[in-house]
Image (tube, rainbow, N blue to C red; front, side, top):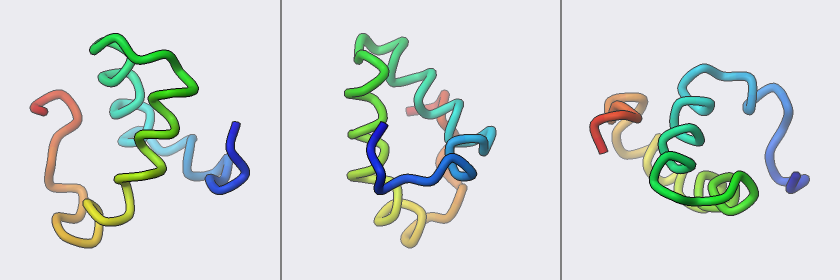
Length: 56
């Protein structure tokens, strides 16, 4: 796992749902985690936890 993301963050239910949905869309776990790391902060700053992981 990438060192840029803490284990505490990965235990967040919202984060787990996002990764689960990315995997459901066909991404491998490592690739899903990289996508999450790349886009999580900008989205959270703009929308908070408003976007639901399963409504993407």
